[in-house]
Length: 169
Picture 1 (cartoon, rainbow, N blue to C red):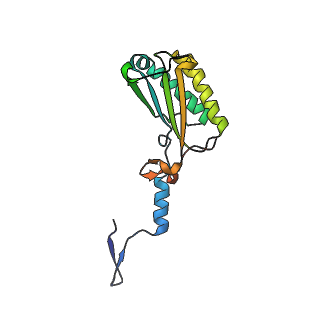
Picture 2 (picture 1 turned 90 degrees about the horizontal axis):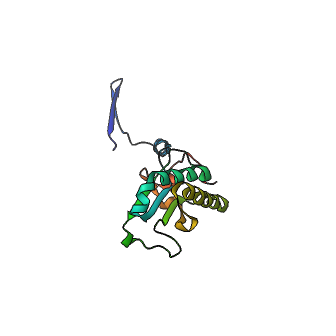
Picture 3 (picture 1 turned 135 degrees about the horizontal axis):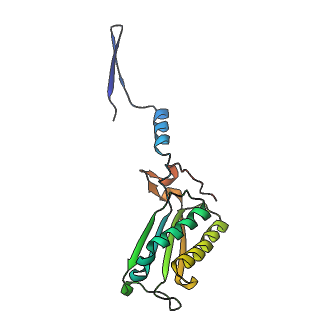
């Protein structure tokens, strides 16, 4: 909101609009978009049958997060995990798996190399399997990359937000 500024100097009265200049507005926007370490994260959804997902939820989150931090070089404080513990009647899984079947969906800004994404997938199989009692055929991983302009956070499109970490790894 802009207002009128009235000043008096040597008997003269001056009134002007205090609308910020483009340069001032751009600097303000730049400062507002410097993303602190706790913002702009990969969104991770984990699905499974309730009685097999809930007992390992904390270990599973820790295992997944350690993989994200290592493979994608994310800061340690960037964790956004959503667990979808479902009734067995609502969760169908392949006949080659067991009721422990777990789906991990990762949504990221685009920009990671194929090698980085493969390293992440390998780490997930290794750590989720080892720490959460899952066989390779009981884990499914999907990585979806989205252009930055298709995300929105901190009140802006993602391509206008400054990040505190590198995406292109």
